[in-house]
Structure formats: C-alpha cells, structure tokens
Amino acid sequence: MPKPHLFHCQLVWTGAVAGSTQSYDSYSRNFRIAFAGKPPLQGSAAGIYKGDDALANPEDLLVASLAGCHFLSYLAVCARAGVEVVDYQDNPEGTMQIKDGAMRFTDVLLRPQVLLAPGADLAKAEALHERAHHDCFIANSVNFPVRFQATVTIRGHQNV
Image 1: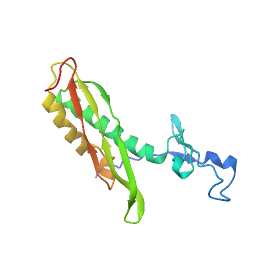
Image 2: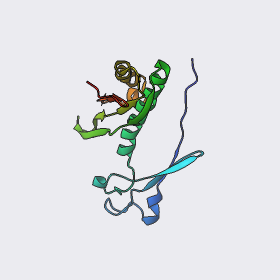
Image 3: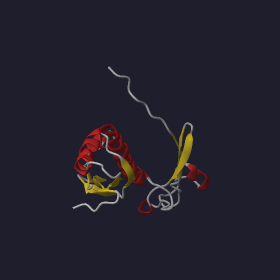
Image 4: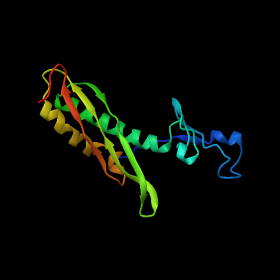
C-alpha cells in the first residue's frame, strides 16, 4: 500500500490579545496559519460572522483550494497531452446555505479562462478540463458539487 501524504500547519488565534470569549460579540476572530518554511496566512471569520472582511476566511480558502487544485491538475494534464497553455485565470464562486439543518457549501462553480498557444488543439484542451476535474483531489474530497464552466481560446484566433 502506498505511503499516505501528510500535510501540516499550525493555527494560532492572534485575536486572543484583544480579549477572551466573554461574549459572542466581543472577541476577535483573527488567526494566523503557519506552514513550515512558507509565509504565514492571516485570516479571520467572514464579516457576516463578525470577522474582518479584509482578511481571508475559511470559506475563501476552501473555494481557493478547489480553484487551485483544478488549475494545477489542468496544467499537468495539458502538459502531458502536449497542449501548450500560456495563460490561465479563474473567478470561482462558492455557494453556502442552510441544507439539512446546517449551514454548508452546496456548490462551487469554477470559471477557468484559458489561453492556448497558437496551433494548440482547442477541442483537446476543452476536453482536458474533465480529466483535470477527475484528478483534482480537493474536489474529490468534498461532499458537494464542484462544477466548471471553462472558456478556452487560442492566442490570436477567434473561436467559432
């Protein structure tokens, strides 16, 4: 059996310096996530949950993780298939709502916009999004749909 891949971080409640959880309205939701040998991330709760909207929140990070995983999976399958990608952007959107009595993500829509090198196989590049979706281990780990609406174009060409 293959050895499992392990990932570690440390979360520190940096808002504790502002006071304890004496009341729901009074405490800071700010935190720092540290990774060995990498820059730390500053975070908070979403503003709707009394956090700091200027900082990333766990919901942002989940949507970003899904987008990042699809992106990296897509570049890998394209490189292996001989499809040259020259630019990639995404504007994903995650939907949270009450379902089965609990607030949860019910859907994430990825919207990758991919630019290919001249001469690339457009049909193959479009089809490879499905392979990337299948290979994305973050999407494979969540219990809600992760969908994608990809736009793929070739540099210097108008798609028909």
